[in-house]
Amino acid sequence: LHERQMKARIAGISVEKALRYCFAALFSAAAFCASAADQSQPIPGFTDTPFLPGNKWRVHDPARPQPPVVAPGTASSQERPGRPPSDAIVLFDGTDLSQWRDRDGRTPPWRVENGELTVGKGTIYSRQEFGDVQLHVEFCTPTDVGTNTSQARGNSGVFLMDRYEFQILDSYENPTYADGMVGAIYGQYPPLVNAARPPGEWQTYDIVFIAPRFEDGKLKSPAYATVFLNGVLVQHHAEILGSTQHRRLASYTPHPPTGPISLQDHGTPNRFRNIWVRPLKLEE
Ligand code: MG
Image (cartoon, rainbow, N blue to C red):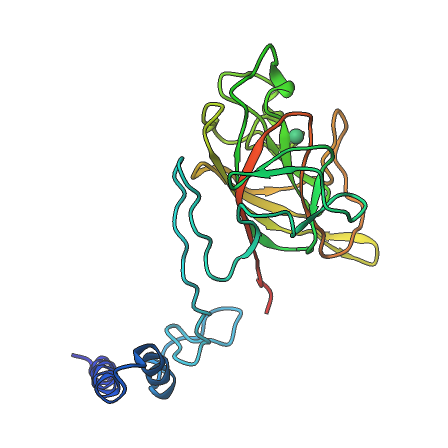
């Protein structure tokens, strides 16, 4: 074995030993011991390796900061919503509308029942505002489709920054223009595939949204979105053309670096559950 690999292995063994002693001495505080050992032991790595292009770290650099620890959540089933990751801001957990407001700042007239949120009068807005995010939303469109077709069936939407709509629609055997289906960035990009579930089934939206940047009143970089619908990739790093428009071309108007997340009232009693968001820190 290479000498450095040997050293790394020895370091690994001594971490194990230290942990064992820790557990023996303080058997009631195992979690505390593990984190203390992590901090007192050197991080394994290499200091004779090349520098990565464009930054100050070497390949396998032991000094490179460790990422924050996040306890992952659990997946949802049709019967019950999953659990969000530990660092998520929960916008709706099935209990109340405390994280939401109407356009005028009041509690919105949407119904919370059986852990679900049903669309009522008027679009609703998150009280907190966000820029770059990972967003998880679950929704269900009504089984009673009546004679509704196209955009009149199961229409709602998730808006980022009060401007950029990720369409919600019943797109199960319900043809409409492609850039208006569920999974579409409305009026701009159809989903890569139609991964819609039938009405009455819970569906998941997982959206990675990079907010646009403005400088001196001009667009510096556009918004981007990567989107999974029901776990299937439907948008890949799509360059958003501007605020969502109906029958018009999208364009950008400068706006603040954060804004609310909103859910659209389009006159259909769609239901929502398990809504959470993780603000992203992507810039050093
Ligand atoms: Mg809509």
